[in-house]
Length: 171
Image (cartoon, rainbow, N blue to C red; front, side):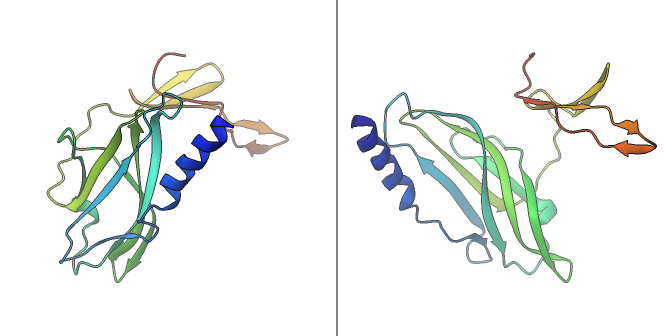
């Protein structure tokens, strides 16, 4: 019964999230904030490094895609991100979904700001491709994907599925 009550409280915290609508970057609101707090200080509600995503609308008159920067408000450090589901209007980015990694410890939270700024291209841990017998490992210090080498079967190329995904540590 205790876990049902705790589960219900967690559901209430997430169900009433005020950002069900996409975030919007405009001339009036040049910064959007992605923020989540975990009000329960229970060790069973600890989210380790997790991929999160948010929809974002862009109503600026210029194309800001190459100028976007995501900053961790709590550390002041820039954060790597990726845009998907991009929609354009006359060469200008109108909407997209932003994806980035974050974690939320028990009783903690996260807070990130997305804005059009002067993003500096930084590659702290470049992507590597490691060739091994029968597979390739693609990734960097933080994330790796292992894929088998494609094979030819009856004269047709059989594409390779993903074998494994890791957090960049040795397996």
